[in-house]
Image (tube, rainbow over all chains, first blue to last red; front, side, top):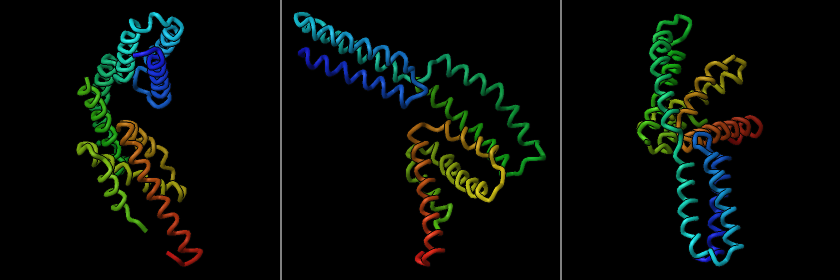
Length: 130
Length: 90
């Protein structure tokens, strides 16, 4: 892989990082962005230090892709555990309150219970994804 | 007029995950119906908050599909109603 390819790949990684920052809220985008910036800086260095290109290129590529994967990994396991614990603490009591509330119509009760179900589904999806 | 069932069928066809298909279809119908009630002046802010939470609990790609289906359904109905009133075409 020549230095031009390394530079272009680093730039692509940077753009991916910026894209994640713009379009993703759950991912650890900070890691991705920092990784991408480092990759580009490294790419620029490789561009300058032509002699080192052959040795640096594979390391740079692997490092950039690894950082990108970390950035795409979604919420951390601690976040998911906290979300699950909060769900377990709040959802049963809230469901009981909703079902017993005489001021809510059947439609309103069903809507609130669907919100709890969708919360549980999201946490399950996050738990299954790790 | 396109009925709410058509909207739900559209959403069901768009959502690949069977576990999320029904909640997405119900959500789409809910948003469309609440939108109509809001247009008539009813305060449905609390109900919209529930819908928002449900929508955010879907995956981003599913959210986009539901959103697009509801917007398409509302636009299509609005066009039919307005053109029917003003031109008698629909």
